[in-house]
Image (cartoon, rainbow, N blue to C red; front, side, top):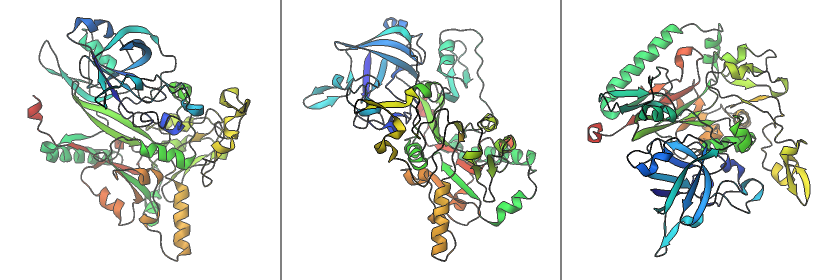
Length: 483
């Protein structure tokens, strides 16, 4: 067996362990937070020495011995992980890393050997035990992994499909009965190869026309004409440019005072990030393709969340924004239940306004101080954005404070508002330019991208009329070489 060491994109080699934004930013590959997880193959195949590891599931604890040092770490099954190998992130397990980074994960930095002065990010002096228990607070933000992963049936040689988690593949490979795979026909991810691009574009066009025909009626009469007159804000996300780095997620948290909740709350599915990056695998189970999809509030023109709010806390503006009135929200969470994209977050605890909950306090100068009451901590808050109290729903606002700032700037300069005047936090932070924000009624950068034949709307068939467009993922490879 061989173990690989790598620096995670968030905390790096431990330099950024004291930054809670980076601790809570999910790893792009395994989607884990607040600690390092041992990546293991979906199935150890061929070597009897690894048979005890075949029953491992996400969140199981194992003992791993690297050289002469033994660690207890949780595991996560990883598509594409090479047989007979495991991988573990560096940069965790620090003893003095501030309020948020101390004793998070295990420290394996010392396991990186040096050969002639150069670090060796692997070791073959490693053994892994079988399951030793279950991690109580499994810090993973995504439990669905695949979207049409295929493999060969060893008995018949036929290709099988599956749209389930890694455990389903394990059950199939070990001969479990009743395996039935199916690729969902929902318009969530569209992928193609460059050689099949023409056919794929025609297929997407046909599906979109069918969805638009079925949903040709607008629920709210007159709204289409209203949105065509003034501003109609929208967004475009190029899945071919997105690398899943998470910069947009952290930028959104920084800009909009989104609270960091910690590992325990994440394990209870209480994470608060307004913008998440869904990661899907597709293709061969042994060597899958990966696509990253930033998912934020879609600002639907037929928003299902608005119809069910008993106090009208969520409503639609004349400019196409799905708005939240925080001090009107009473926390019924009907809107979150009705959202097909699951992008609304409920603030379970009062993270940022100096509450007195014992679990939310820190030790400083020998005293228990509410975390939000620390003056240095509170300096991170953006004064242009309200700080929400517990018990309300939060979500992406398309950085409405930046929209207002752009309008005021244009008014003071005596001119009309331009797309270039307003850039959302996620758009500003994206290193590849995958995110474009603007006015869908203006003939500007956004309008040009919306005319691409590769465009589609996620879940267009449910007629919520999203204001966010995505680009089909296109690969450029000769698939015959893989065979």
